Amino acid sequence: MSVGMTFFAALGFGIIFNIRGRNLFFAALNGMIGGIVFSFVRMLGGVYLAQFVAALMITLLAIVLARVLKAPVTTYLIAALIPLVPGGGMYYTMFYIVNNNLDLALATGLDTIGQALSIVMGITFMSGLELAFNAYFKRSRHHI
Amino acid sequence: MCYNPVVKDFDPNSLARLATKAGIILMRSGAETYRVEETMNYILKAYGAKVTDSYATPTLLITSFTLDEQLYHNIKRVKMADVDLDKIVKVNDLSRLAYRHQLSLKDFEKELNKIESEKPYPFYIEILGALVCAFGFAFFFGGTLNDALLSSLVAMVIEALAIYIRPLAFPHFFKYVFLSMIITLMAIAFANLGLGRQDIIIISSLMLLVPGLAITNAIRDTVSGDLVAGLVRASEALINAAAIALGSLLVMLILRGGL
Image 1 (cartoon, one colour):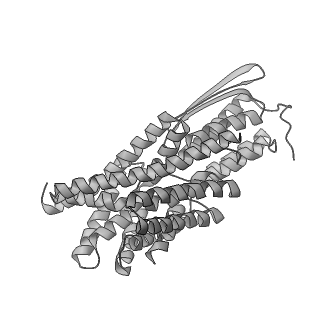
Image 2: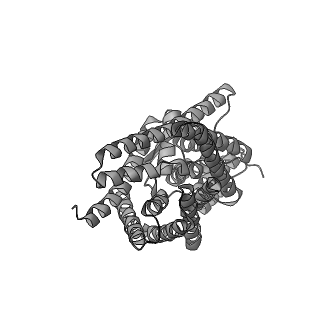
Image 3: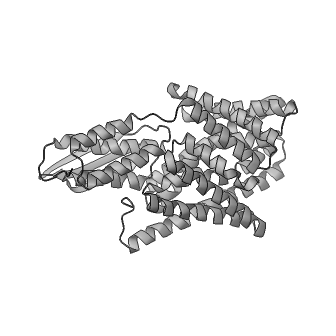
């Protein structure tokens, strides 16, 4: 059940970021799909791969949605991506520092940075592909 | 209705002003840099400008264009504001209309002013958004219904506080330290009362403060080749994240008697 819960997380962020109408629903849906992909790949492989694939899927979906619904990519991307951010890792790193458990703090900190970098890789890869696609078909990114 | 750009019934200075105004609305609402630059160029070209050049960073907009053999410039300082993705959608649609020559510059100005003065969701809906958000996160991070309800409560308080102190225009750093201190205090209080798990409550409600827009835009700007804007946004994200961690850390250290 916890898998679909990123729908509500993304929905909440959509409201806070003032997304309106059908865009709000699609942004939340994108967040849910990201959560499902993350949990699915997490069962098969490591957490870094899961973060990478989930970020990749979310960015791809955001680009497709932007083209179909004629709205900026950001609208569908940001609220959906935030649930992937390793907030738990950040918290535990800090928690271990406070408790003077520096070994665990270092391990968790490095793990968190690794996860963040995996997300960055996912977005970078797909955004770069989008640029190449547009350049190849000589399409402006603006008048999608 | 079709607007004929050959008949120039406007002052070129007001065109320069309106194009940068659209850019400012976009930048303040959290658009990517290439979108700000391209939108300004499209608006200028729509009203007959030649050789348009626009440059945008999160804090500064510069535009320059030629109209009837005359060179015009405009430079604007941008102040950061709250994210408002709906404004980006609307300015984007408006610039598309203008590019198809369906708007006179007067109508364009009227529409742009309308978009600028638009209000975000009302207070209670934003609070509801924070509630839904933390509720979802608590389950995603493996919490129980109890944890989810407590996280929602904390998130509602945080969002209400954030909206309440918005007009005070606190520096972002202090705002995030303050909000994260409140979150940690409330979570520790609830955990000590035996109502829920401290870590789940803190993580679920801290996610509300995570600089997600700055991170995403930093990456997309860097990929697009807007390196200055990418660096500015990356540093913004890092500083905000540090502020959140610092607030939480301070409360834990003080409660532990470590300070």
